Figure 1 (cartoon, rainbow, N blue to C red):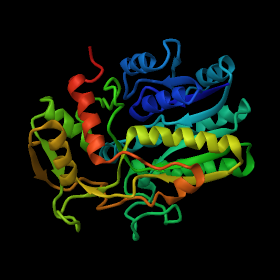
Figure 2: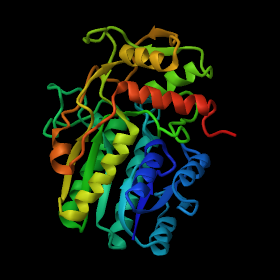
Figure 3: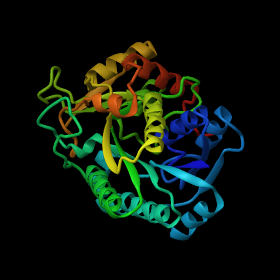
Figure 4: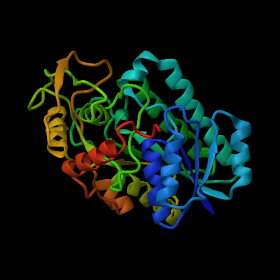
Length: 337
């Protein structure tokens, strides 16, 4: 039996594939390379096994997806495949709705058709919008501030409705801001074009690919005026997905949400300072206007993850910046040859 990892060549998917292999699971990767690289697949194979299965396909292609389930003995799925940039989604809303919702619906249909019941869905803290109460528990009101956030919110609702009437058992992992890289430095975050997320932008400045960081807003109601997020090491996050699959294998949960975060909020400037420590030199930056779709501050209450999954984060911000820098300096051009 195997676990299908959609978006398996992406940042979180590739790290999760390694953690799944280390936990003794057989892994089948699927990706369409819309925002990832074939180099990530080879790097994952180098860390795991050279024969790890990979299929290049789009989840909206029903015929291709049907072939995947026919070919491989899949009994559980982790669904990462999605466009994921808040700012970009504001300018490309229809692309985001088409890709993210279409992928989720196509996958759920294929799972039901082939009798696969266990699903871990890659959701996001963006479904909380700007919460009134922090730290955020799973009971907090949900909504969104961007098209990306709405695609996660709507995908959650689609899966809830499906679980009500179909044989699906689903954990919605609402994770906060993944950063860092595998400690070997051979896989990491390699976005196409100019990064939309903070830490890849910081590290591309550090390695000389970009001139300086742009900080979007310094007038938020936070200690230093910059936005605050809950940053989580991508390996901690990957291990959380393994714990979620273990939970699904042991009991029926219906459709339930779980936060994956550290419970610690860090501002943009605090991240820049931590990155500067890891790199050994100051990161140049400029303050620009706020970015549409961004929220002021958010961090998790991760207590439910500990209770429901037996999981907790173990790596701090300095660990995240050290490992991310190790990846970036070892791979200054990402997976590009």
